[in-house]
Image (cartoon, rainbow, N blue to C red; front, top):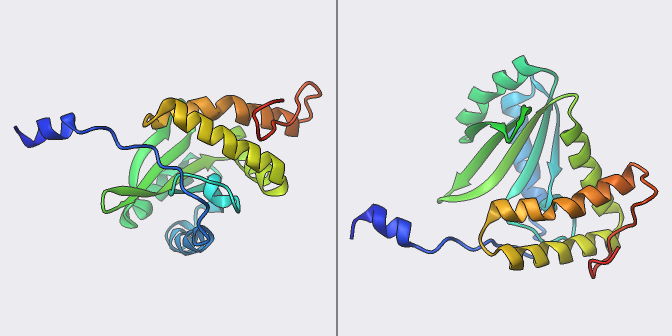
Amino acid sequence: MSESLERDAAPPRALILAAYDLEWPTRFALERTRLLDAVAAHALAIEHVGSTAVPGLIGKPVLDIAIAVADERAADACVTPMQRLGYEYRGPYGDDPRRRYYVLAADGQRTVHVHLYILPARAWDEKLAFRDALRADAALAAAYAAEKRRVADAVAWDKSAYSDAKGPFIASVLRRIAGDPDTTAPTPDGAR
């Protein structure tokens, strides 16, 4: 059997949700320093986001980092320095041309995702607001952990479906943060 057929026949890798790792903040601090050395002239802010940024929360063992820049020129100027650090530039993220995506891998495994936002960007604001809400509310973080487990079980290895399926929970939290009176906080059992 050819190597490509063997690779195609291999079962997909499972979605891994790991227990919170006390090393995640240290890994972020080290990566933030590397990023600052490379793009400080262009970056307005570099933030640790996603589940690895919330103490005690389960998550994929991949750091999520958000970088804010002022304009398209600054975003473009970050590409080469980020590539020199070993990041693969994936271009605009989804359908948002103001959001760029980078991936860093080691030994064939992703270790860092960088989302670069051209401000103003609603996605930047929402990412930070969601992280801050989880950090401030242990019950909300527990509810999100339960939702992550439920979704991971439901979608198995499909990482895209995993991200999509968490969307309603995240949207509910963001509506509550924005003051929507018809939104109640999700609970650990998934009830609202």
